[in-house]
Image 1 (cartoon, rainbow, N blue to C red):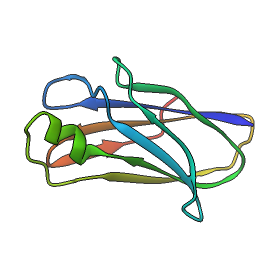
Image 2: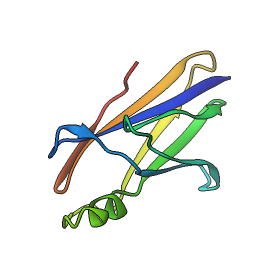
Image 3: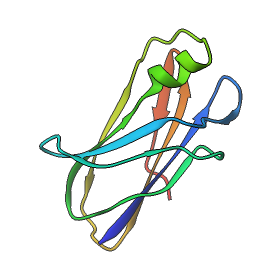
Length: 106
């Protein structure tokens, strides 16, 4: 089995996005894990994963609403595929009210 982590950064403030709810689902949409980003904007271990397709759901609407900031994207959903059962998967998210980007991190 391998592990999954994530890191959310707020591009507007240049700081970690603290308190973002992150939910992991499997290919059929069943929840696998859920967590909040910590003071560094991280979830160090979301879950251990077998091979397959997963989705990370980030509740960006609640994050921005708590800061009284309007946002175009109320959620960000990133689908990815686990093919190596011995590797570590890291999915960072760079966030702003009107844009986001992601990549496979290390």
